[in-house]
Structures are given as C-alpha cells and as structure tokens.
Image (tube, rainbow, N blue to C red; front, side):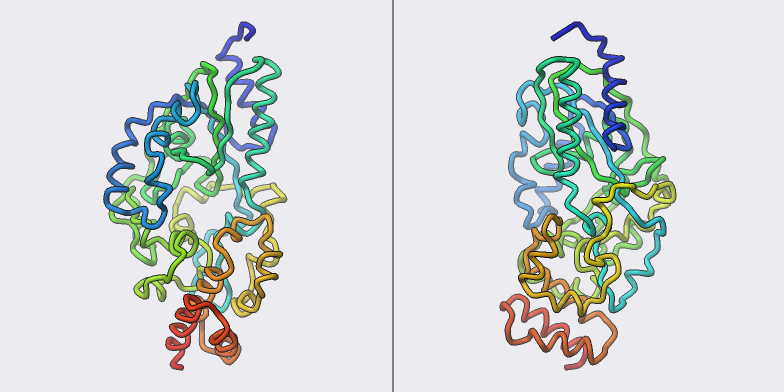
Amino acid sequence: MAEIDFKKFATSIKGWGMDLGFQEVAITDIDLSKYEQYLESWIARNYHGAMSYMAENHEKRCHPEQLVPGTIRVVCVRMDYSLDSKDSLESMQNTGKAYISRYARGRDYHKLIRKRLQKLAEKIQETAGPFGYRAFVDSAPVLERALAEKSGMGWIGKNTMLINKQAGSWFFLGELFTDLPLPVDDQVSDHCGSCTACIDVCPTKAFVEPNLLDATRCISYLTIELRTSIPEEFRSAMGNRIFGCDDCQMVCPWNKFSRETTEKDFTPRHKLDDIQLVELFAWSKQDFLQRTKGSPIRRIGYDCWLRNIAIALGNAPSSSEVLVALQSRLYNSSEMVTVHIQWALDKHGL
C-alpha cells in the first residue's frame, strides 16, 4: 500500500460517498463493548421474539473483527428514503386504505445501497491499492445503529431509531468494514431531552421504557417478522397497518428536518402509498409475487400478507365491499389466514 495521509484520505472517502448518492459518510472504530451488555439483556428478556437470528452469532455482532477478520474501522453511510414531507398520522386513522411503512413502498434498498458501497470500495482501492473490506446493508450480524451512533451520524433515540439533527430518522444505513487505519469521527450527544412523543403514540405500547423496545409487541415485528397467528390483543391496535409501522417516527420532532429523497428507486410502486385494502386483498398469489418483485414486502410471503390485510379489513369501517372481500376468502385460504378472516368478520358482527 502506498504512503497515504489517512486524514486527507478519509475526507476524500466521504466526498466520494456523497458523489455516489449517500447523504452522509462517517467513520468509527469497532469497540462495541458499551452496547454488548444491552444486547445480552434484551435477548435474555426475549424481546427479540421469533427473530432467532438476533440471538445467533452474538460474538460476531458485537465484535466486527470476528465477522470480518482484520477489520479495524467501519465506514458508515446513510441514505434518505422518505418521499413524503408531511408527517401526519392521518393516513393511519382506521381507514379503508392500507398503510405500508415508507421504507417498503419502492424497490428493495439492500441491493441499491450495497452496489454503491461496492463502488465506494472500488474508488478507495484506486488510491489505496488492494485492501480488506466487506459491505453490509442489514444483511449480517452487524449492530448498524450502534456503529452509526459511534460514528457521530446521530444518536439512538427513545424509539430505538437513529436520529440525526439535520435529517431526522427517515434513512437507511449501510457499512463498509475495512482494515484501513482511518481517523474516526466524534460521537454526538443525545438530543431527545424530555420528549416522550414516540413512547406515548405507540399503538401497542411496545416501549418498555425509553430506548428499550419489546419487539414482540411492535407492529413492525408482528406484520413482518412473525410467521404465525398475530395475538388477538394487538389486532385492533394495528389499525390499517399491513406492513410495518411508522408512528414513532411520524411524531418525532426531529423529522421536521428530514428531506425528501431524490432516489427514483424509492418511488412507491403499484400505488402502495395510496391503495384500498380490498384491492390488495384481491391480489392472487401470482399478483403478489409479480408486484412485490424487488420489494422488501415479498419476504413475508403471501399468507402473512393476507393475514395482515384481513386484520386491517376487520378494523376498517363496515361496508358491503369489505364484507364481500373477507367472505370471498373465508373458505379457500390457509388455516392461519382463515382464523384472521373470521376474527375480522366477528369485528363486523358476522
């Protein structure tokens, strides 16, 4: 490796990252000892639920050098994804329309960000020569928010999301593990103050306390991670949320500083930002597979998709259209879906 002024090189890396479409690039070391005890406690209390992968590879998750030998630094990046400058809970007020979390309305972000991280690595290699690296985008045992917080990209707020003073929390994260001895950035302080808006608004009361989420009560977990029947105690509170939940971000005061993305891949497809529940419930399995191709939604599978919509239809205002939609699938669905359809019909008095 040629002689390199790593301080200047770090500045160049950040510039290249911005040129590739990232809104911010920051660098941290790999000491996650501060976070390890919190992860162990969270798992011990079974707050991860069915997400067994969170309890696996614990050592690699907390020790990046075990995941990628030779790693001494992590280049963290963020990319804004929101296309809606209006933060309002109006769209989640028990309507006949579906609510899908903002991050999932367009194309899957994993490939897009990973490709750009690869381009960043190639640009680094042009100057530094061959070096050790590996790119990650929510795809391995990596404590993304912890690394991003250490890098100074923001702080982990009371809703457990990473919050940035200039950008709120509507953004994706990515990492480039590297063996380059780059200078690290300073961590920033917490700026949640006495605000508890995110905790207060949670429909299922998933926050045990500030900065502590019981994922088994979280609507994002219930609609995306859980593959079995959704506990009845949470169904009414889910409202029209059929994939994820954005409530705790919607009410965060810092999101008034968020900016709309210019990434075309994040543009909503198939009207997923404004579509009736009955229309989505009518999708055949072939429709689902075709219209969720290249989308993060596909990973939950068709049965969970119908399960989630059935609950939302149960929470929707009664109408002949809603009742016909539910009854049309009552006798030709899987046992799991049928249970949720019957619950929905019971809600409507049938």
